[in-house]
Picture 1 (cartoon, one colour):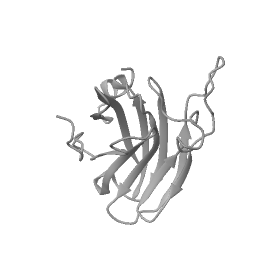
Picture 2 (cartoon, helix red, strand yellow):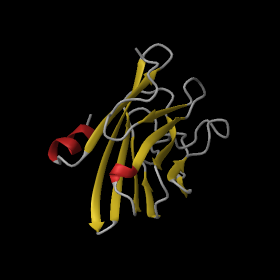
Picture 3 (cartoon, rainbow, N blue to C red):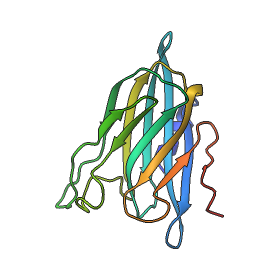
Picture 4 (tube, one colour):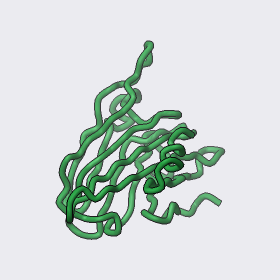
Length: 167
């Protein structure tokens, strides 16, 4: 996948393979992350989330911290539908809470053509934080279409799922 080139040319980029058992196959997302210290005590986080083959797509992305950082400068970039595709192009809004930042699309039940990370697409997320990457507790990728699991949680620095249901 093209997202793997980012990690290949920049050794500071971390690349995670996030998978779960789908209806009959292992479904896979790639998540790449680059964290840069922009000033003493401030870090800029950049994420790219690529849907390699998940039919269920993704409709949310969350970064959880162990404590309560200051988070600012949130951003989002997607690929807009084109050539008559029926998909909504509404940007995902960011919500900052006590110890996390989360982006969400409109849920599947609202319109089934909401702006989810569909097969073959890559979306970008970014923010600034007063906490370094060592304070990131984990990441959660919410799945757009209904089913089990409803979300996939993966850890920083391990590339390993907390959900080990796929064997």
